[in-house]
Image (cartoon, rainbow, N blue to C red):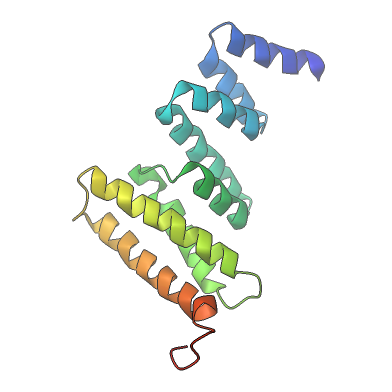
Length: 156
């Protein structure tokens, strides 16, 4: 184990950062992978956030995927859009399950960031942006209904 760990570290230190990132990802050492990717810039971070998010979704670890996207931001590449739709559907389908308010809050933040990113790159009128704006509104109103309007029962 220590020898393998040292080899990956040596790869990164010797300038073979792409190979080191791939090895970290293959071994599931995502914290190290994302840490090294951050040193390489946003393109590398987006690539490995996308990969990690896909793996989490395959394992049905939706909450962890939401935390990841909340922490690092949702990469705005169209290849990731089905993941984001699936995350939104999952969170909204289970909105009335106890302790799911935090998931909705995270989802709302992720969708807000995604819509902002898409608008900044000139995709404001694209069908995908419109879809994510709708999901953002649905998530926002569901979040309000679940927790934000408890003080105002006449609106709940």
